[in-house]
Length: 261
Image 1: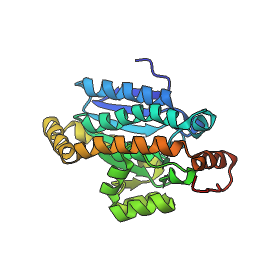
Image 2: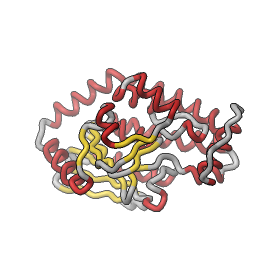
Image 3: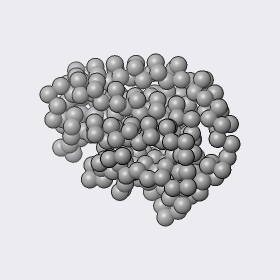
Image 4: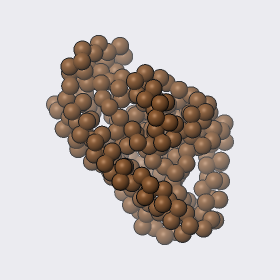
């Protein structure tokens, strides 16, 4: 499989997917989503794969969507319309894959990076990692089922706080809130994650698949609906003057001046 934007390998029944745009902090664009989705399809179809790890190459897990791409688009709303089609496929692929998926959060996870991590079955985090909702600070709204999956993990009230105030928070805080399952020293992250994945490969895979299906039955209808609700809202938000200002301010490293337009 020829994939330019991820590093993909398999060993001992574990598939390792590394998002590989380190120069852009693994920000998602069309090509990265396309390659990730191809790898997810392969993981689903390969009976030799029993657990999947998703992580980032370099200093970040993923900083979110590619803001540079949005800024250069003549119609950010249309760009978001097309990009979220790929994102929504990614999220449903992670959830519907009948194998455990672990997010190995090696660094910053923001925006859609949080959504991808939240869609995984478990999250193991380096102690230096930072998190941020990020969308609203540039005049957009969460996508990738963020508004479903994150509240399920951290609670409705805390999720609303993250959306409206958009704080940067630490790995320790992410553990306290329940967003991640474990926090480990940066130097131990990969070994700890791989050890967990290997333990899963020795488990009752059919039971895991049926348990994951049951989890999905409890929320999958909500997931599909919420992905579409978010997609429509994000398209509208992407066409606002506030989004244009927020994206420009982010790239110019200044505070945005929102006018509610």
